[in-house]
Structures are given as C-alpha cells and as structure tokens.
Image 1: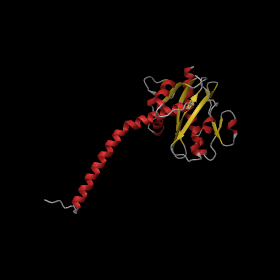
Image 2: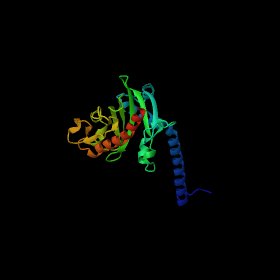
Image 3: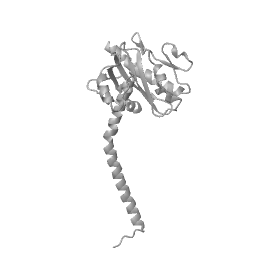
Image 4: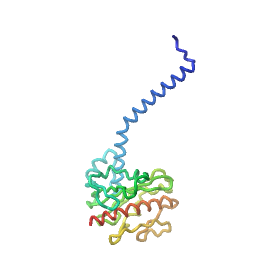
Length: 236
C-alpha cells in the first residue's frame, strides 16, 4: 500500500520520528562531552586557586603547575576542625551556599596549602557569596603568619561590566593584600567602604558604582574567614 505523504498521520509520524532521532543524537553528544566538561571545570578551578597566589597557568599547563605548587589539601568543619577522609578539591562550595537544605553548621570548608613563587607556605581558602545579579566567588591566600591576606582572586557570573564586574580586576584584588583576618587570634571583620578610607586598617575600598557587589564580597569574606580563623587557632 502506498504511503500518503500528504496525510496528517504521515506528518505527525515523521515529526515524532525526527524528534526521537534528534533527541537521541543530542543525548549521545551530551554524554560524550560530559567527561570533557568535567575536566575543563577542574582545570579552571585549579587555575583560580593558583591565581590567588599570583601564579599564572593555562589549560594545557595547569595540571603540572598545580601538582608542583599545591602540596596539601583537606577539609575543615564549621568549628575549624579537620574532617578526616574528606577531599578538598571535591567540595563544591558554591553548591553548599545555594543549597538551603544544608545547615551552616554542616558546611565543609576546603583548605589548600601551597608554596608561592618566593617559596613561602601559603594557605588558600575559597569564598562564595552573592552579588547584585548572581553568585560571586573567589580564593583568598593567607600568609605564613596565618592572619595576613597575601593574595586574592575574585570572579562572578553576571555582574555589570564596568561596575560590579570589576571585582575580578587586579586593582580591586590587590586592595585586599595586607589586610588581616584576625588580631590577637580573634576574628576581625573587614569593612568594605566607599568613602576612600580603605587605606585604613581593616577597611577596603569598594568598586565605584558597584556598591552592592562590593558589599557582597565583604560579606562572603567575613562570613567565611570567621570559620577559617577557628581553624588557624586550632592549628596553633
């Protein structure tokens, strides 16, 4: 029996078959690219960690540089105690922050110990928070004294170019260098200001026109560093 290509049944059948074929192809491509996406995400994470101590890398060189630079890593809990058996690199701090079902007391805090270009032992700590339009995050390098910020690297998902997006620029990241996260073993919050007084101790000048994003950086810094100060005190 000849197929009536002008019938509604043929049209619907052809459309369904096309959807199935295309869907199968897309699903196969997605599965095939999953490993590549995961590998690229891991390389980007390593690059961000290294950037906190001023070490540049590319996707082709980062694995070797990371393995030579980051000498140790582990996870601490909300009280600053090391959690045995936990892998720092596997902790998704951004997901923890978004997931409201995870209590603050149950969050995990990764710690990465590395040597910078001068051979100093530096502790690198991730931070995550909220900007004006979406998530913001970064990595903070703490010097050998366990209290002075030696470097910072921030990033964002959708902050306004020329305003909040400037948090990832070197000039803003350098404003945090030299600030202290504790004084006499006591956590000290750092205030983000817009009056130009950021040269004063425990103050950092925010981004002009990017007040909400700047405040978001300060909030994520202080919230997270309050936990890490507990770790440094336990370490002593």
